[in-house]
Image 1 (cartoon, helix red, strand yellow):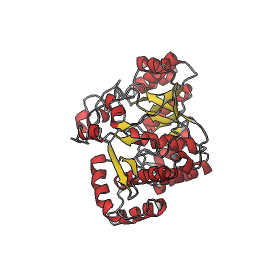
Image 2 (image 1 turned 90 degrees about the vertical axis):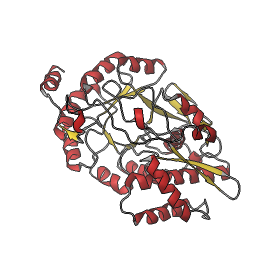
Image 3 (image 1 turned 180 degrees about the horizontal axis):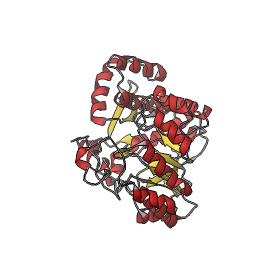
Image 4 (image 1 turned 45 degrees about the horizontal axis):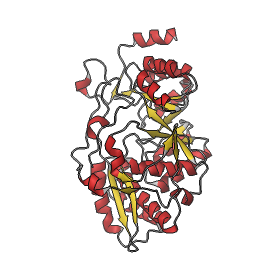
Length: 389
């Protein structure tokens, strides 16, 4: 479906994120001969993921919904012939796998969190995006205890202004993932300037495929580091964990192969004393239910991303709602995920486009170049600001 843009994101102060023009949500219903319906959500490139699920359905019809791990392996084998399909292939698996967990929990009359091992917490903390001081104050006034500011333009100035406005008791994160990606030197300079803010984490300061850069960043910046929303498999996450490059892994609930693989990643992260904070910025409401169940069940769950306020149609997309209060989401205690789709509303918002480019993050007069990585210029104002800190 074509979803409307959120009210704002952490990047709204400097331009428009890609979510403002190109947000699609893709949902899957899996039906059984016993009459049960399981619901899942896939992301990664929703319009392409939809085609992948349609193709994969040919090898899934007739399978037992109880064989979740075997079905996951079967899908991986089927995808293998197409090469490393990344978040597209794993986004398709995520939607199917999520629906299977929903089905199995419904059949047993228990919440998905019970199948995941039971709850370690009855409510899951979340954070919201705040582009500026006013948005941050509004969030804190609602009782939210964690906020994130994003972008690369004037990020140090904005982050310090927001910290001063909300005080030291509110957890704060900074997301630097462009556009465009920072060079490692710029990421280190910005990270060092942000150190006095005592962030909960510094997110995606450089591209996730630059392992050498991540090693330099880890050595030079005294802040917890987070990344992972653009990665699709355990193998892609493994070097970040083995090399001690992250304090927080951020698998996207719709891109990372479903709850089966996310639980495996949580165990890998736990062995490395790394926390889990699922990415959810571009996702619809079904994935949020799944992430809530996961975070309630794993011991190293940290916090969940949430866009609040979001598009008003979000609540109309589903039947059922997550209950939240003062920065905590209550874990659903009914059978399955606790959510189903409002099919008529979804049908009334057909997918139109899924490609968009964010605006406002490049150096002056270079936006039309659409550079993937760019050195920040001019550098002198950033250096003088850092000195004054």
